[in-house]
Amino acid sequence: MILLEVNNLQKSFDGSAVLKNISFSMEPGQVLAIIGSSGSGKTTLLRCLNFLETPDAGEIIVKGQKLLGGASEEQIRKNRLHFGLVFQNFNLFPQYTALENITLAPSLLGLGSKQELRDNAMRLLEQVGLRQKADFYPYQLSGGQQQRIAIARALALRPEVLCFDEPTSALDPELTGEVLRVIRGLKNKDNTMIVVTHEMEFARSVADVVIYMADGVIEEMGTPEEVFEHPRSEKTKAFLRGAASVL
Amino acid sequence: MTFLQQLPIVFGALNVGFLQTLKLFGITLVGALPLGLIIAFGSMSRFRPLSIVTRFFVWIIRGTPLMIQLLIIFYFPSMALGQPIWGSGENGRFAASAAAFIINYACYFSEIYRGGIQSIPVGQLEAGQVLGMTRGQIFVRIMLLQVIKRIVPPVSNEIITLVKDTALARIIALQEIIWAGTAFLKGSQGISGQVWPLFFTALYYLVFSGALTLLFGWVEKRLDYFRG
Ligand SMILES: Nc1ncnc2c1ncn2[C@@H]1O[C@H](COP(=O)(O)OP(=O)(O)OP(=O)(O)O)[C@@H](O)[C@H]1O
Ligand SMILES: [Mg+2]
Image (tube, rainbow over all chains, first blue to last red; front, side, top):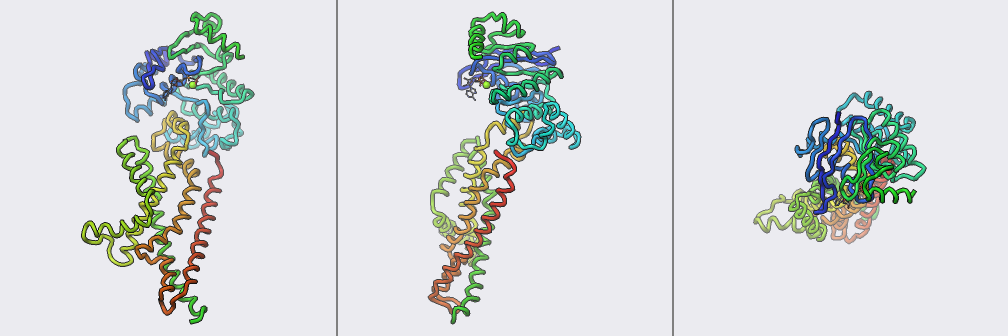
C-alpha cells in the first residue's frame, strides 16, 4: 500500500530551480531519510509537503487523494493536517507551558474534550520522556528538551507523515542523542516519517529508504545499504567521502 | 488676598483644568490604541496601494508638529466649508483636540505595533500554520501576547509623553490644567500676576505619570513569566 506519493514536484525561487522533478513514494510505517549538501533543496521539499511553500508543478497524493490544486486558505489548512513538521529550531510558543504547547492546536481544532486532550498530551510527554516538565515554559528547558516537546506537539495532531528538518542540528552534540532516541522510538510505533538529517549513522540505522539530494534532484535513492555501501552515482560517492572525512 | 486664601481657589481651578486634561488623555488612549492597530495592519498590507497610502499618512503625521495639526483640525474645516464643524465653546474645542490627538498618537502607536509584530520570528507563524491554525488564531493565540510583551515599554513611553502633550491643546484654548494655571497670571477670581499656580501644575503631571509608571511596571511584571 502506498501512503504518500510525490510526483514531479517542482519549485523555483526567482527563476532558479530549487526542486526539479522530485518523485518518490512511501509506505505506511516507513522512515525516509533525506541527506544532501547545503542548498540542495531538502528544506524546500519539506516546506512544500507542509504547504508552507506552493510548488510550481507536481502532485502530492496522500492515500490516493491528490492535495494540490484547491488553493483556498481553508483547503490548504486541511492539506497541512496530513503532515507534521518539526523545525530545526523548535519554534515552541514561549508564552505557553510544554503541556499547553501540545494541547493548543488540538483544542482549536476541537479534537476532544479538555480532559481528553490533556491526557493525550501527558501520554505524549511520557513518550518523549518529559512528563515531569509538563508545566515548564520553553525558556526553562534545554534545547534537546524543547525539541522533544516540539515532537510531541506535532504528534498530538496524529499526522499521517511526520517530517523533521535537521531536528538535531541546532543542538549541542551531547543533546542530539536524546532527540534521535525519541525519533527511533517513534519508528517502533509505526509512525511514517521523513527525516532530513546530517547524522549519517542515524540515517543508516533508522531509515528504510535513503534519498541523497543534489541540486534539486534525487541523485540516489535506495535502502541504506544500497546508498551508503554501494552508491551508483559519482556525486553520491563524493558526498559520502566528504561526510566521512568530517566525522 | 493671602496665600492661604488663594490656595483653595487655585486648587479648585486647577482641579477643573486637570479633569479636562485627564479626559483628553483618556479619550486619546481609547481612540488611538485600537486605531493604531488598524493603521499598523494597513501599513503592513500586502496590497501595495494601501500600504503606500498608509505609510505616507503616517509620515505626514509624525513629520509635523502636533501643535500645527491641532490648529489645522480646528480651523481648517471652517475655512474650507465656510462653517465650523466642531461646535462652539469648550465642547467643540475638546472634540477637535480629541480628533487631533487620536490621529497623532494612533500613528505613533501604529509604528510601535508594526515593529512589535515584525519582530516576532517567522518560525512562530509557520509553527502555527503547520498545526492547522487559521490566520486569526495565529494572531490571537500566538502573536498577540508576544507582541504585547515587546511593546509595553515603548507604548508606556508614548503614554507618559501623552500626559504632558495634552497641554498643547491650549493652542486652541482648551481649558486644561496649564490654561487654568495661566489664568491666575492674567487675572481670574480676584487673583492676578501670580505665577506659582502655573508652577504648581507640574506636581499634577508628576503624580499622575508616577502612578502610570507604577501601573506599567506592574504590567511588565505580569508578563515576566515567559521569555521571547
Ligand atoms: N524563500 C526563498 N527565496 C529564495 N530562495 C530560496 C528560498 N528558500 C530557499 N531558497 C534557495 O533554495 C535553495 C535550496 O534551499 P533549501 O533551504 O531547501 O536547502 P537545504 O537543502 O535545506 O540546505 P541546508 O542543508 O543548508 O538546510 C538554496 O539555494 C536557497 O538559497
Ligand atoms: Mg535546510
